[in-house]
Structure formats: structure tokens, C-alpha cells
Length: 329
Ligand code: ADP
Ligand code: MG
Image (spheres, rainbow, N blue to C red):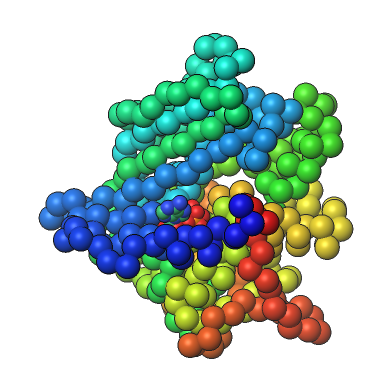
């Protein structure tokens, strides 16, 4: 398929919805449905494909399982939700052994336990193609506390959690040396960001419980693509500053051009990125600090009614393209 995924999604999005309980369908990190007086339900699904998202040389089976759930939890985090249930559909190549599939489930189970999530269903099929794992997660969020991409306004502070670019950098190391190489400590840390990304559920909850107006997304495709999604959903222009982007010390030793490519267009960092009204930023930063999450200010929202993402350098301002990791191109 030659089309890009954004154009496909636009074409297949329903023109009308029928269910009165639906609050938000296609277009954000997860769908939102009315649940009860206190909570709304948050639902999303993501797929990992062998040869596209992982290779036997880059991840163990346990890590593949862990990550297939983690990427979904990251979408729940971006909605401010509390994880509750998950379902797993798996297409298993004929040459796989049951022991290997069980390892995948062990990885998922270990992460699910952290959030007291329950596995409540799924499907098992065999395939002549590669291993495909599709995980659906269900969570919930207090009414009116969910976090959408459409809430950014002029003057807001743009923020991101922890560091970005590490996952793509880690993948590059793994593709070069494999996963059994004797990596140094700082290399192991960036590799871990690729193999075992930590979904930012706790930070998402802090943001959801604050009274501030926040627009939020998770970094699955690189910060350029995620900021474009916020700028389009909110109809604003976002300007970030190159000197404010937070990197792991190992990336600071790499070429600037390389680390920017990993952070802007690499993706799979599964950090949270968003905008918040200026006055609320410092309080949120302190709250995140208390749970060991660094919240960095990386720019501002500058103009309305024109979606765009700009990168300010010392002497220049340039446009950041929406080219994240896009399947099919
Ligand atoms: P994310 O990166 O947060 O997982 P995506 O960019 O994959 O989000 O998807 C954007 C939106 O489009 C989401 O609301 C998602 O549920 C929806 N979506 C993506 N692919 C499909 C599809 N094949 N059919 C229906 N909806 C889709
Ligand atoms: Mg997302």
C-alpha cells in the first residue's frame, strides 16, 4: 500500500456516529465512552508486527510481550486514564514453539501486574506470515478529566516528560551489535528505552487530576509528528526551542544532527508531550518531580488558526515536517 496512514484513517473515519454514549471516536489516542456517573471508559488498540516493530535480534520474546502492552498503556496515559483490562489477539507463525509464545505472555503479565490489569480475552490464530500481536486496552478516567489533543491555546507552555530520542538511538545500537553485545551502562540505558519503554501512566494521572487546561499526546512517532497532531487538533502554531529538548547523556555525546533526527522523527519514546496554560506549569513540574518524572518546558504556542510546528535555533527558525515513523512510506 502506497498511501500514508493519516490519509487512510481520514478516508475510513465514519461520517456519523450512532451511539449516544460515545464522547470521542477516531482522532485521539483512544476512544472515550460514557461509563457511569463518575467515570468514562477509555479504549484503544495497537499492533506489533515482527520485521516491522521488532526483530529476534533486537528484542527477546518477553520484551516483545511487554512492549505490545506498554505501547497501548502509553495511549491510555495520553488520555489521563487508569488502566484496567486488556485483550490479546495473536497470529503465530507455524515454526513458533508454545514455550516462546508463553514468554510473550509473561512479558505482558509482568507489566499488567504493575497496574493490576486483568487479561479478559483475545484470539489465537496461526499464520504463514510474521508474528503479529494486537493488544486492546480498556481503562477509565474521571468525567471531564480526560486529556485531548485539541486543547492547546496561544501562550501555553509546550512540555515533554523525561528524555526523547533514546528509543531510536537504542534501536540503532541493537541493529548494529544485536541484543547480546556487552554494552556499556549508558548504552544499556538507551537500549532499555527501546526494549522496555515505561508508559507514563503516573504522569498522565497527575496531569488529568490537575485543574489546568492541557493538550496531550504520547510520543509514538517522534515529537515532530506528535506536535503536528496537537497543532492540527487545536488549530495553533507550536514553536519549540532546540536548546530545550531533553536528551539522555549518551545522546549528548552523539552528533547533534543524529540526536535531533532520533528525537524529532524517530519515535517510540512513549513519553508524554503536550501544552499547558503557562501559570500551571511550575506546579505540575513539582508534582511530577515527586514521582521521579522530569517535566521539561520546550517551547510555546504562538499563533492561532494556523496549524504549524516550528523549531527555533539560535539564529534561525525552521518548519518541522510531520514525517514521523509512518508505515507504508
Ligand atoms: P496513536 O499513534 O495514538 O496510536 P494513530 O495515529 O495510530 O494513533 O491513530 C490515530 C487515530 O485513528 C486513533 O483515534 C485511532 O484509533 C484511529 N485509527 C487508526 N487506524 C485505524 C483503522 N485502521 N481503523 C479505524 N480507526 C483507526
Ligand atoms: Mg498515541
